[in-house]
Length: 238
Image (tube, rainbow, N blue to C red):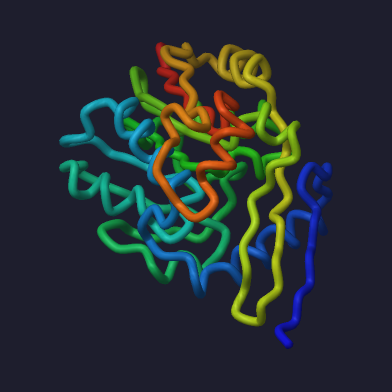
């Protein structure tokens, strides 16, 4: 009989030890986490993110909290002059291609101010306990007129109990800690950091997210119209 162990810590307010739990979980997930969108939700999220991107040709770009580097590869293919991919998990970083991999925290970036023309961050800001501090640090490394494009699990979905879960090689199911940041909180944090929000868009179950998978018809009926992904584009007008 396969071992089953459920670790459910979504929605917790993370202390330093709990942030260590998040890193440990991603290190464990890395062995099965491919550098491509590997489920319908991620494919829908990536399609929306790419629609919000500015032109990346000849730009210096940071793939922030890059994971296995799925966006780093796309940014390189889009003609970016420089792509750096930063993550706290060195096990995830081993999969990165098409970019220089940097081990570091997304809330204490090891880069000079104004280093990037664009910052892309996919499905990671919910791991930041202080959204304002995260936004200020991203704004700091953005050059004037630089763009931030990022996504996260939608606060409505998080409030409804949806979590980010995975099964490891031992058959254990883990749910990764996540902070619920409201849409208004994102707007306030961006404004306080000197960024202007240009677009706020969603992926909704059964609408933008409608790819078939086992059990999808029932899920789409139950959650039809529920926003599951939030994506934002903001610009540094300093």
